[in-house]
Length: 231
Ligand code: ADP
Ligand code: MG
Image (cartoon, rainbow, N blue to C red):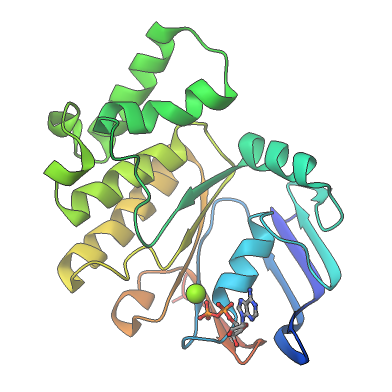
């Protein structure tokens, strides 16, 4: 069974009289342990698709199964619970909490959803900060570190609840090319080390090559699926 199974997924947005078909009958599967990218120009439906897989939004029609559970019809509360149990997120703007230190930002999801002891949390948080290369920054606040370091912290934060799937919507859009490349490779390392599936979107052709599976979206339709593992 695939970790994500989508069939005939459609999403339309209505603003007044204007109806936009952001996704049209999309079907795809994401295997556990894979490193998958959704690629496409601005407006092609990447964020819409990731928000649906991330159980943040509901489709207009079609089915989405994540970790074996049909998530398209859940209530707001059930969706929030499902995200807390199974998913991690990395954002384009890093979305760190400015008043918290690097360490506290990574610890935060644990305090929200898990009931482990402080000592166990500390080992996990420090281990992750070390793995992403920012343990020496742990007492700083987000404004005192670089964009690349902020995104490293965000990757650690996304992994701290040990999610099955990490979803990253254009995680490198605010980074220079070298840093973007390093962040994508960091995610790949984390995927192997933490046995987490990663799904990220980008419109940057230079980093697409790093993905194992590439879905190309165009105007709400999956135009192609490339599997680079066999090469
Ligand atoms: P991408 O992330 O690839 O840029 P999006 O999923 O954000 O694409 O958008 C796909 C299409 O849906 C675009 O035409 C966009 O304008 C439209 N859209 C996205 N979100 C909304 C919304 N909340 N309300 C109305 N239209 C939206
Ligand atoms: Mg987008």
